[in-house]
Length: 147
Image 1 (cartoon, rainbow, N blue to C red):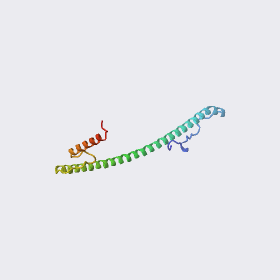
Image 2: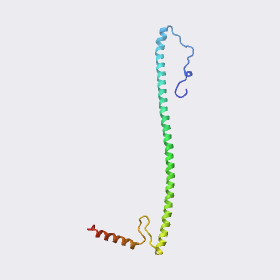
Image 3: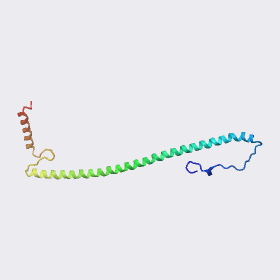
């Protein structure tokens, strides 16, 4: 059998009859119920083979879809890994930049030069920071906003 479908060559071929019936009526009585059993069994077997083929087709379809999704997931994983490496490299470069800026700011501060705050961070000039806070409070009080 190829797959689940019977081939014409799979038919049972009976040898020469081993039994001879006295009359055609006797043959029909005996063989009629056997023929019915045979026909029902062949029909049932064909139905089950068709069901098995349909199940296999569904399984093949789902297996193909699963493989497609696995491939897509692997592509996404590779993309994420690549982006993670890019992120790590960018973070390392950012840290190197911060380290260089801090070193330069420390050197400028030691030499007595004012260092402007980077990205809104606190200045290395705390006295100047307090003077700005005091000026802001004075401006608020002058406008009558503080109570």
